[in-house]
Each structure stands twice: as structure tokens, then as C-alpha cells.
Length: 494
Image 1 (cartoon, rainbow, N blue to C red):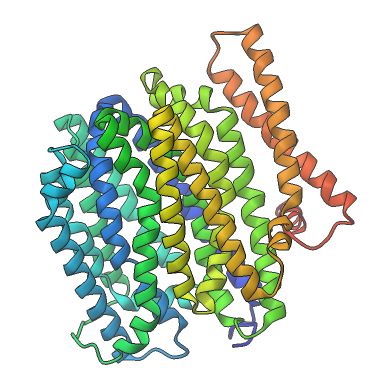
Image 2 (tube, rainbow, N blue to C red):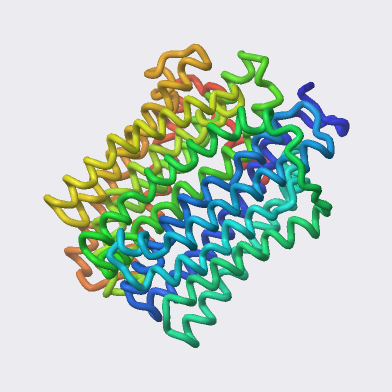
């Protein structure tokens, strides 16, 4: 595939436009999510969030069997015909039926594992979610394959909006955790319906091309299953050992961190994947894409994660209310490590492009096995904070193992990949030191102030980080990369 499309736009331009759309859509969804959480946290109790968080953890593991793997397998094919689309739909539907059946039939044992009897009926109703997602139109994938991200962003944002609108409305009316459950189901159904409206598809049940899909998607299903176990084991253990109220505090802290880091980084890698697929057989261009991807993701995500950690004690009470203070140490611990782990999204795109899904499965299996004892020991010794420390260790391990796999594929050393965004590391360290010092000064002068120190702290962090990054870039000889792209866009805008 050449570097330009029929309109003459370069691959970098199309990927950049797609990434901008994805990030813009993701920002819109994160604003909606934070607005929704701010309202729901004042209407519902921590235990309500805990019940749904434990059930959602099991739901997530089952959804990992359905979501994305056959979509990605389709995107890798050089040419797509009706048999490919029919096979993808049929396999997705089969996995969805299995996932929904497991959730429904094993709801009572699952609820017992998290020590929450209320979760059993929640799980039975949540079984509708993977079924709805398994019915999505596989033809919708063509938009992403052609780097036309507008329809995908529209579906995601609209589905998320209706999900949160449903949850908020029902929470005010019912005052119960069922508001969160119905909102989740509405979001899944809306996204599926919209996929068929925008990309009409008349399904024909066949598995004619199953070998091509299971060779790629089979390992990816296993990787997704193990991967979601990595991200959900902590909430399952917290719910089992400490109860639903503690699980609610922990879940909302971890969810805020994901909103600020993972949910913004994933759209970047999602937009980059089709572009990387088109240059998979061009090592030099692929290496440049990886380098730029690491610089962009770390340049954007790391200051957000570090800044959120430093200002968590001010931001959390403003957003959720004073009664949610127990989430502050969770956010402080998880935010910087979650931001650092975002570099794995870039490298994972390369692994998928190369088709090494078996390595992803083995990576996730290894990290799941090593992270579990870290969380268990941490929880036993230090409670919620210990669980967060164990999860942070798992995030770091996941990032390092991913870098090791990626280094082999792009024929670079792991240390070289790790140090590509070194300027962002240094700039974040300087930012954290300055913001901490400024915050201490605010505390001594205005001990009861809340909004002003938060805003000033965020603004100070942004200025210090940007200034330090530009100084380091200039001292390095102004190389091609993240800083030059950002400055170029700012100049063109002004």
C-alpha cells in the first residue's frame, strides 16, 4: 500500500487526522464520564458502585472474548469480501452467546466470589451486554480500515452520552445501583443499532473462513481474557475481602485514573493501527512510527498522570465530594504508573500488525500470574493502598514486558525504546517538584481554599511541563518528533 490515498493525502496526515478525531471524541466522552460520575457520586452510595464494579469486572472478562479480535483480524486482510464479513459476524456471535451464557448461568457463584449476593441478578441482566456487542455490523470496520474515523467517533460518543443520560436519570429516580446497570445495557444496544444504520449488513451465518480468523483472533481472545483479568483482579479481591463500600471507593479512584490516561491513550493507538498495518513490510517507516508514537503518547499522557497524582487531594473532593476522600491515595498511586503503562499501547499496535498475538497472550498470562500475589500481599498488609501498590507493580511489569516483545520485532534494544521519550520523563519530574512546592505554599497561606489552588496548580503544571519540554528539545538540537509536530500545529493554527 502506498503512502497516499486517492486524494493525495499522506499516510501520516490521514493517521494524524484519525488520531485527532479519536482523541477529540475520547475527550468528549471523558468529559461526559466525569460529569456523570460527579453527579452519580452525590446520588448513590459507595456500596452501590461496589456492587456494580464487582459485577462489571466479570462482565469485562466475558466481553474480552467478544470485542475487537475479529474486527482486528478483518482489518489485517489485504482484501475483504462477503465471506470474510459473514465469518467475522458468525464467530463474534458464537463468542457472544458463550459469554452471555456464562454470565447468566454462573451469576450466583460469581457473586459469591466477590461476597456480594446483590451482584447475582445484576450479572444476569448484564448478560445482555456481550450479546448486544456480538451483533454489531462487521462492515462498520471498513471506516477505520480506510482511516475514516468520523463514524466510529460518532457512534462511541452518542452511545456513551445515552448511557450516562440513562444512568443519571434512573439514579435520581430510583436511587439504586440498577441505574448504572441499565445505563450500561442502553449504551451497548445503541452502539450496535447505530453500527447497522451507518454500515448496513445482512448477516449470513457461516464459518467458511474460520481458519484465517481463529489463527489471529483465537490467541487475541485469550490475550483479551487474561488482559482483563489483569485489570480486574484488584477490584474482585477488594470486594471479596473488604466489602462493597471499599470496592466502591477503590473502583471510582481507579476509574478516574483510567479516564485520564488509558481512555485517552487507546484512541491514539487505535488510530495508528491501520496506518501501521499499511507499512508493516517497511521496517524503517514502521520504526519511525513507533518512535513518534512513543513520544506522542508519553508526551501527552505522562504529565496528565503525574499532575493528577500530585493534585489528587484537591481534585477528588471537588469532583466527587468530601465523603470520597478514601479514593485520594488510590489515585495518587495509580495515576503515574497508569500513564507510564500507556506506552504499551503503541508497542502493542506493532505486535498486532506483525500478527504475534500468541506473544500477547503469553505476556498477559505472565503478568496476571505475577501481579496477583502482589495485590494479595499488598491488600493483606496495607488494605486499599496495598492493593493499589500491587496494581501499580502490575502496570509497570506489563509495560516492560511489552517493550521487550516490541524491541525484538523492531530490532531495537528494550532500553532504547524505553528512553525514546526521555524528555517527557525529565519534564514531568520538574513539573511535579514545582507543583508540590506551590501547593505547599497555598496550604500555608489559604488552608481552606479548594478551587483556586486546584486551578492554579493545574495551570502551573502545564506551563512548567511545556516550558521544560521545549527547553530540553531545543538543547537536543530540535530533532524531529512530538515537540516539532505540536509547535507546527500551533503555528499553523495561529
